[in-house]
Length: 297
Image (tube, rainbow, N blue to C red; front, top):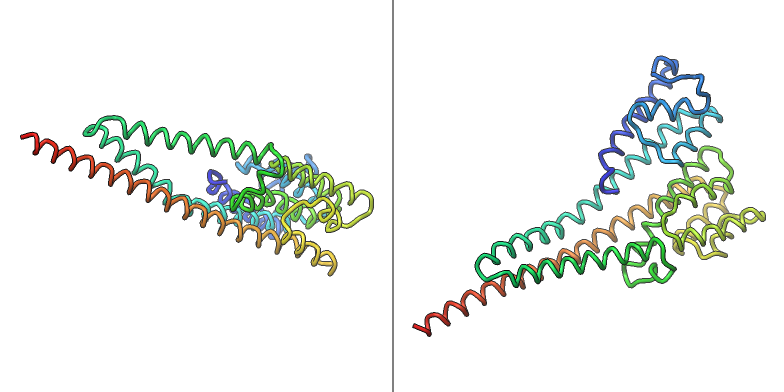
């Protein structure tokens, strides 16, 4: 996510430019497309233009071509790419300060090691290594472990929100392109990286295939956050599921971005106090050593 902000911005420009050209009536051949590719014409044209499509985007554009709404679908994908890029920028902004403090702490420790010895440097490096190992363990647990990882204090809701985003984005895109909700749900579930959520969504799929509604399936399986289920259920009951999916996706992005910023702020404060502690240790060590030498003379 953090590394694809620029790629998402470039993709959005290409998607909008192609939609504009098609709306103006330009033949697909003049834009570099090969009509002989059929429903694959637009995805392959975009790939030649350097746009890397996800499997869900590929499926959406294929369905839109068959439904005769390719221009509208291209513009919708451009909007989604811009929203994804903006979300990535917000997350990156929240992480910038704690990352800077970590770098500064390491630099200070390197300088101090030349004066006071390498003990403090080893301590700082060990602490950072332990934090990195903890982050790797938690990430692995969230992706492959059970529901307990999504119930961690504070971080659980953040992880759950992040896990929902690809599902909601893909489900909205596919459903808006005319794909039946059962097939759209199945495809969107396949793109979920968190195993425990993917299992629950598979359980919800059984309800859908038995004739139940999306909200019934999600409620029965306990998939997604309670707020997400409520928003989708309200939209489904009013016959506005597509609009509800769009609003829910926007809401989830906004809430998750705020949670990431708050978490980064807490991490930044912790890093600040850690750096301050290191600085105080250096100062005390220096003056204690200095006064000890004075008394020795």
